[in-house]
Length: 150
Image 1 (spheres, rainbow, N blue to C red):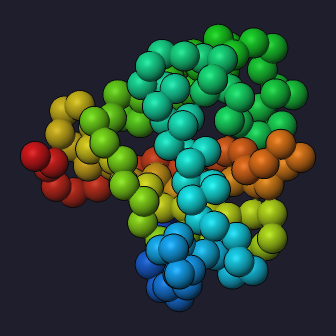
Image 2 (cartoon, rainbow, N blue to C red):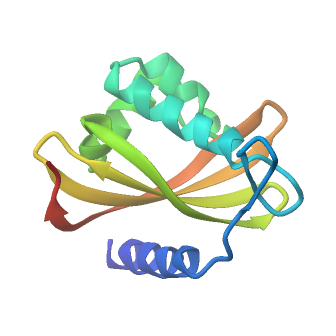
């Protein structure tokens, strides 16, 4: 767990110092290479909403191929995620996107902040990979952060 939190902290620091994304004329954030950050942010948001809606099949559909190899059913995936300490994400009241770092054409790390149902703040670093069907969530490292949401 400490290794995971240390990795998350180093990724958050790296993301905080990442150069700002360029904006297109339409106001869409563009990653290096011209990809829209909204592409992977939409995947993250949709998966979070599926967790909030208690919809294992939809949440599972946004996970990377490695999850589909590991879990036999969406319900197995859902229960494992819930029991792995990610209830603050599933029960969150809101999320907001922070900095991101696209480390390769098919790999991005996105900082996401949450206000949990107990009004506590959490921060996660989502690792996404671009697969045949688009961006998919491959890793999530979650940590409680100081403060209380209102």
